[in-house]
Length: 295
Image 1 (tube, helix red, strand yellow):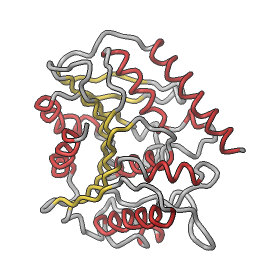
Image 2 (cartoon, rainbow, N blue to C red; image 1 turned 45 degrees about the vertical axis):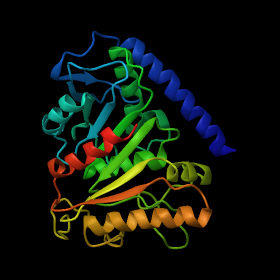
Image 3 (tube, rainbow, N blue to C red; image 1 turned 90 degrees about the vertical axis):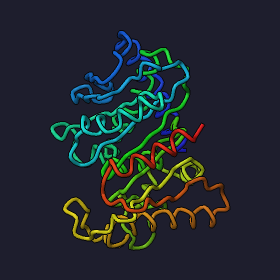
Image 4 (cartoon, rainbow, N blue to C red; image 1 turned 135 degrees about the horizontal axis):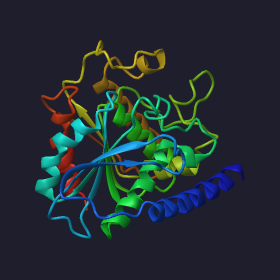
């Protein structure tokens, strides 16, 4: 009963806040080419988000919208710059929200801000609200968006897909995450969130729905350095594997096992990229291939 009430309140908050933002932030369409603007979500209006974007001249009402989530350096402009040519060539609207460290700690970025009891204050909610704003501002008919993240951004993406109810995501790509929230409920001495699902926020129905979502675990075959300076070193992270490649493989295999045990649909995929280590620019080409081939 609590979870049912929680879901209803959560969805109402999305509708009310998202609609209010679209009305309050109505503006002229984005300028063609590279640009940026400041966005303040109703859930945390005191924490601005710089939105770096690339708008192709060929943008149509049914064009794809692609969100790219930066890594731990919070360098949204850099990500925008090396994704911009893909957006131009493949005619999609590129959106790179930058969650600056001055406003968003690790708990608010990698972990989506779910420490807040009110889901409207989750950082995850900003993506859904920003999508509504972009659709309104650009008069788009697009009903879903594509969500990609690398490294810390990949942590954001896979937790977004596990924890957000009814995400409007056509394809999510988690590339080279350093550690994972495992798709299981902790038992016995197993660690809780962020290493496993929090049963206060996710029930069996939510897990089943998440396993049926289109999530690609994208891994660089050379991302195997166990001493990488940004690789999480907590004991719980080390238990997932010695490096990002093995941790991603473990995460995917566990998810498949969970789906098999429950006899529920499983639509996640695993893809490795030869010759690429911990590099977003190296992973982006494979990610774009997946985005443009997904309806």
